[in-house]
Length: 482
Image (cartoon, rainbow, N blue to C red; front, side):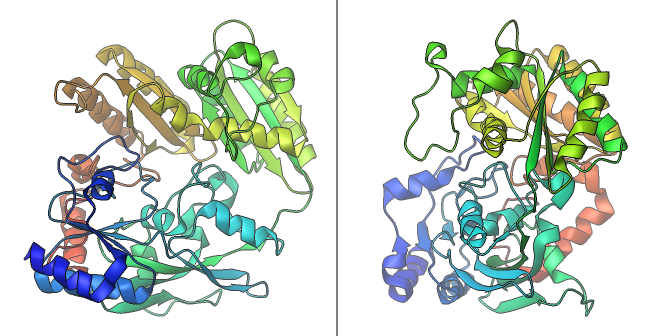
């Protein structure tokens, strides 16, 4: 059946089909650090909705699994492909199909990169607010598939809040359009919300109607604060949240993360660090001003970045600074946008910095903001009990934490059992504190074993039933989530 499917794809799609072993080998992994043992059957690089339809019709006819894939930047193994599977890439579908300033919306293809979309919108004085830390490389379709969050969620919400409607190709090749372009609309069940975060298990997202807004007026003010430990920084972030302030971003790096990012980015010539290249997404950091006064001497400390935007950014930053200083933090502030963006780039470098250290199990849990300090205490206890190294970055404005387990692979190259045991305790701790297994990365293959712990048996069966309704043959991203 597989050979017949490939022959049919070749006849229908021509050069959009690739069976080059070297290319297929690269599809065994995403950015989660995990890979499948064998390469997939073929790659289809769709250039149109019709290409996606043809691929899924042929796959359904021959009973061949399909793995939807965008930029491959996922962190939960959701886009990993294996033997006998067709990878269906939407990366070449990267156009802006429509923009309306009056309706404050844009219609885009799934493969457009977040940063490219915002660069185009900025020319019109608008922007797309969802900002994964990977915006320079991640696609809008992939963000929708995982309901990605990111740096600006505290003020602007997660991806779900910015999606009005979707065009989706179902497993048998049919196309449905969900949602609407109007601000209001409650006709029928909300299939748009159902598709967001479905990780390619219900259909292939090919187009999205997204909300856009005018670029924030006024300037920005960025606070850089250092603390003796992550728990102290977490308590300070909670104080800002309860004071009624509205930061656009509030990001936390624990002590291990600060050290890793500093090593990765380097700094002035005497510090070494990596070679910088043209188009480097991590600009030189303002060591002489905000960075050195915090981290230039002694051991690394936990770091909290708080960004305000809009006409009252300076007023809010001044209030936040007083709150942070009252907690004993070492605080600096800048209203220079270039310096502020350099500090944000430091936060965006967290995942690359950890990857540069070796093998990393990248995790993603979220808890209510009130439980944020307690979750850091749980992480520290897990690290000590299991003798593992955990470096944590967090979206402090919304309680989403990214604990990263740095480890030496076992003999087979897999994550050692004691690291999985520690991760299991991490998930249970998040659930115990009223949180969730994943705030934005998705379930993929990494967290499916713990899915029932959060959902319970009844809800899990309902969700499996929905999957079966949309995908009766089970060909869409098999083995992911469920």
